[in-house]
Picture (tube, rainbow, N blue to C red):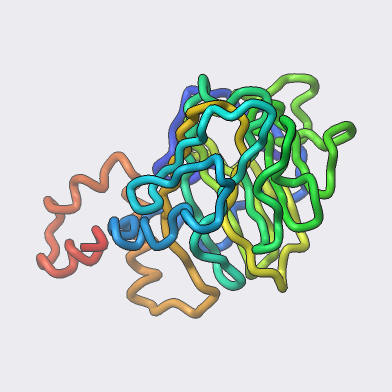
Length: 263
């Protein structure tokens, strides 16, 4: 089974076939990504926390991105302002390829995970309080020091997936899984067994003056949907992303057109 394509996603980046037994998107992910993103105020409320990061990191624009100071022999991390213990959450990380260095790790952490160490390392995922994907090496880390870490996506047969500047982090606290998506393709669950914790977006970095952006995309709770809402999803799925712009031409009342477009 290959990775699962998400509505609205396209990318020229190759995504070698993964071999996870269940690569279906978490329930509600396509719906979450189809809805309008949260406003700028919400982005900042879910952004990087200037009071919860390494002393070598400066959080800017109210939490929308951080910049790591050029400090030698230090690995530095940042945690988000909001922790999640329920629901499905997704956020986009933007990290330029030329600013990653030897250890660029993206994932989640509890409030207890350390955010600085005095050498270059994959800090996120090196302990029991954090889980991370090294987007340069393609390795998954949790209570890991590096050697023997599993490859992600699995089954790449020696090929290393090139992770583009933007990637999605998908945290499903209803199922207790953490996964990632690239260019509209969900790569499968990277970590399981996360239920019962409160987890924060987190990264760890080594590159001097690297800038890492976070963009919170929203939340979905495991609640029954109305028939009206399910009908909207069905119509949007039938139209597809390429024809959503033609909703205004449909012979429908204006209020219904706005509803279909989440306006």
